[in-house]
Length: 345
Image (spheres, rainbow, N blue to C red):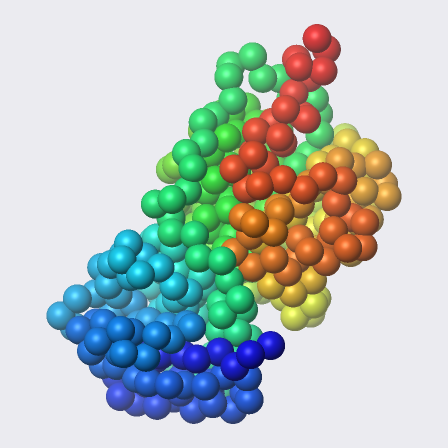
């Protein structure tokens, strides 16, 4: 892989130096410049033409969101947002990801060493360097399924990572109010998942919430795995429910998509449908294969519409994916496959 050229934008000189120092330790990354505000950043982008920009959410003169919107409208490029891990930071970061930012990394908080907070920043920046930038405004609108939809009893399990905010907004927009019971693992900081679930709930016909121990898998309900402390699993038999398991990370992630998919394969088998969306790495590929081997239908996002074609690629290569589709068609495909009315015709 060629060296990724990065511009670091932050109003704090200390934070610029810290981010630059962490990135420079990776031989596949070159920090080619720094900027203290959006106006300096605009000139630096014109002069240096970076591959990736790291952008502080809160800056003087023009906030990060307003500057990001200008970047995505006038000169689309991969942007990794640097945000505080707070409720306000989560809301702003999610808005940034909707505008087209590739990823979001949390700033060091009280008691959290900077080295730990930015441990995966180089990997995320390199993934951003390979990303397909799809501004949020370009996302094709989706419409909820017609009223004749009747769930066929299947459980839907979805896994996503980098680019997953856009992907999940697009997929769930096609769900009707009485959608199949759905569980989702999205790689995201713990402080972000509740805000993301609330945002999805506001924009989708179905009910969306952050999963909790014992949450029932009911028709019309979508559960999002809480970030950070536990893995989401599906448990039960006649009455399936969410189970939160505080175990070590799997594939470097907690929650892990593999853990979710493996549990669905065991509990629901052929009465399930698995979907793997955009994301770097391989988390979820093995679990999706277990679902397919158990008789489940499986769908993978195609390369052309994936922000990062990592997880879906590995799943495709190992035979876990029954059918690949562009993002804009996945929601409707899930609904069609789980529609008892359609199958009875």
